[in-house]
Image (cartoon, rainbow, N blue to C red; front, side):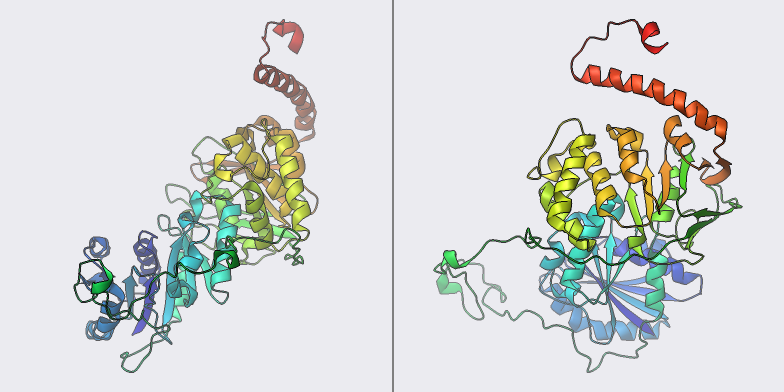
Length: 505
């Protein structure tokens, strides 16, 4: 029987990830079981039972949950063997971040979510630091830039870990994780095996039931804050601090010559009968009604889908299904920020995670260009969480254009950014790249070499832009410039009382 340990902070999405992984393994008729460890109560066993998965629950009550875990785990292995499981997964909330439920020689997975804060990877201790695989969840809620920064912080905490992004709702990424789990070690028991890290050394009067506060009641293994420590010798630093003059040598990105979209299926399960190859240097626009699946296609490309997304598509780079997130730079509609850092700190972290050169110089350039795109200026000291929607989008446009060396660029409805979209597109579309633009804007749509038309979640047709459309585009741009003047007039407080017929005609 194969045995895998899953741990992670509460509400990080462990149960959802495990359910999606087991769903991938069920196609091979593998019998899977789960042992869920928690403190006072859990309802996750109901989710497992609903999915037809055998589950055993262990509640530690007033005992240390991780001590309770390790005292019970060998009996859990016996339980799994007696029930004929091919795979047994233990799920532990790891409520004491100092503890580690991971065992030497046993595949160890830690689940952590992108919303937990930039410093969380270094806070949760051995259960992440000693994990073989770190699963990052809820990455779809934040921007690609913030995902990359968070992933970088995970790598700093555990350089040897394999990082996998899994969406617990759609199952995206679960197939990749299931491949690693299938390679897990088979065992019969854990007799004589050792933990990867020691449990906390703490047996004091409070462990044994004492409730009175005071030094007369504090006996056993205790530890106190040293308030006499000389504060001048302590330099306050954030874990994400970076010397302003630091520079990091740039790593070459894979040379991309082509990208191929292999069709999956539409929302009704009907086959998406297409295999479309895009060459480097092409700009492809994606059009279709709201809700038709334009953003979903971009998401498939962004994760270089291998048939594990809701559409079932496969994305090939140079004819292969590569697994490299650095190939793609994404500017999505989702511009949420959760990190409590300044604009400058955020750019510097992202620059460091991307291994770019001249960090100080590129930071200044990104702030400069972002302010050219946005209406109201902001500084590098501005907190990213205080930026408006338009400012956030402008920052990410400049970040994507100037920081990224990725050969594939994805742009989702840039016309909704509240910024100068022509200037933005000029920054983003560069030679030597493959660019996808999802849009409802006719001007942006006709700027592309081809248009992919999406209907009911699938590619309905592909249209090559014809010369007459290029001619019409010139007239449309003239009208658009007039509309831009009107927008700027309104923003500056002018009264729009001039003759519209004469103005436009």
